[in-house]
Image 1: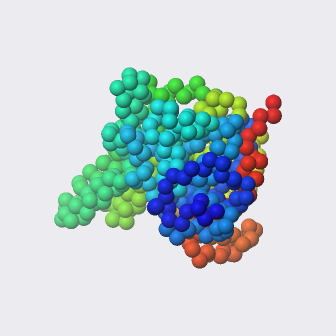
Image 2 (image 1 turned 30 degrees about the vertical axis):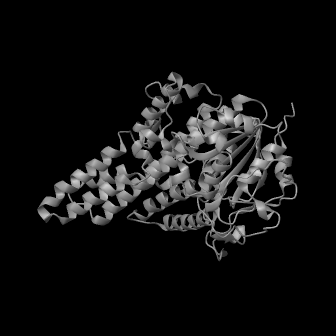
Image 3 (image 1 turned 90 degrees about the vertical axis):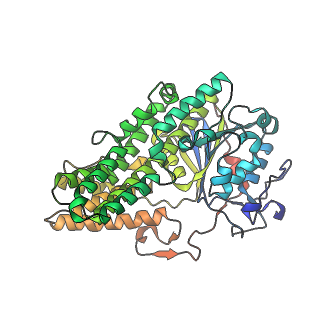
Length: 480
């Protein structure tokens, strides 16, 4: 298999996989996580490849003799089953003449997947070359965050329909630009203003601090407490945007509810506006540490919003694929956190879903989490975001628990119940870190807080050990 195993991702070139026999493969390299789900709601088998957004020049570890690089495996799989329909969704942005991520992505396997299937990624609307080479494949540009890039990065055409679509998307991109702040321009601006304020004499600092707080608050936008998700959707669904028309898609109402819940959760967890209002209500100037925490929370809130918006648009593609036909094999290649969120939504909307295969480290803590939340409600009756445990991945659950922890620590009079709850939350946060970060290996689920084994390579190895027959056997079959 050496000719089809990649050691240095930076030198990858497209290979012809016609008639390549994948039956002997037992390891797929490039992405460390894979979940295969039978999802009757989508009339599909769904394959979620979770990526770490890294390059390697020294191989992936594991078994080399029977391994193959993911882009090459997918190519061979599509050609082996010409009568099966495949949809490939990648964490890839809208572009003009060439794929933006070819020059900017940190992910070797995503870039090289695009290279292998470049005839399908080359343009947004002309699929002639793609259909000639891969007649049973549809590719989907999954990353809506690319809309915030400069106008020249968006595809353009003299065709009236295409131009209308692009202009529509461009308007949305402009409205959401701050929330897709890849270069951290907001944080840089705020940090520079903070430095200027601290350099002023004591008498002039107060007005400077107030101006900075107002600027941060203005950049957050105007929305009522608990309505952050609706606020973001008011931007998405304005000016007769394509996102309004998505309301006609079956399952969109459930998706909208799910995404709004995640956005409201992010606002609850970080809530920089809440901190700003508390500071502005008092006469004392904020400390440098308070300012830095607000800027940090702003960064987390906006970054998380961008991540959730990717999930939203990618999941729209899932719903659209469902409309295309009744026999689908959906393959998603994206960051690990994105695939976890998609998996949560599948479980949320499809009660008949069945996990066929997964090597994700998932620790079942729903019951303990619910106990902690119920206990918290008794002490903070008016300050609780209702968390739907089954719709959330470990990353957001950790942020949520850390918010509850901060609120408990700020209590002036802590009783025995509060101290016990703090201990439970601390343990849950540790469990979430174990489940979320790949550098930890869980030795025993029941005692995972105590039994942690840090791997020699903190990023582990980027491969999935699985027989090709397991993947081929999972391909969707319509039983109706």
